[in-house]
Length: 154
Image (tube, rainbow, N blue to C red; front, side, top):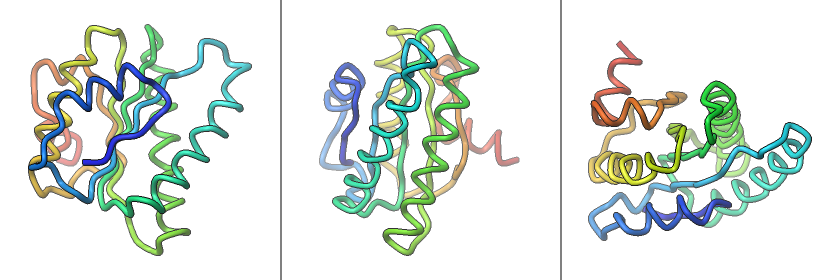
């Protein structure tokens, strides 16, 4: 599992649970939703540049984007959906292949550890299910990422 991003706290939480057993073809990205909508275009440009760089560096089959939305869950879900859509487009255009892209939205800082743990559990397996799925860290308290993906798919 490769880890990158623009949110140091999410990167730290993911790094703490990373092991050599995780998929080498997986990329996790940690970002924060900007505090104001005025900052959104600049943030999207930063995320685009990060995605382009990391996708060409890692060439992942699976991407999990963890977005900290600080009490703005609906906006965070939209941002995560946009981020994973952009990742899929970058992967198709740059690498010429599909990417399974999943989003996880954190509503508060306390969810960071549970989200990191659930992402790590998911990336211990070989599943490529869940492309386009966005879940909340609150949902991850009750279920695994794989189970939430299956709920969404079925």
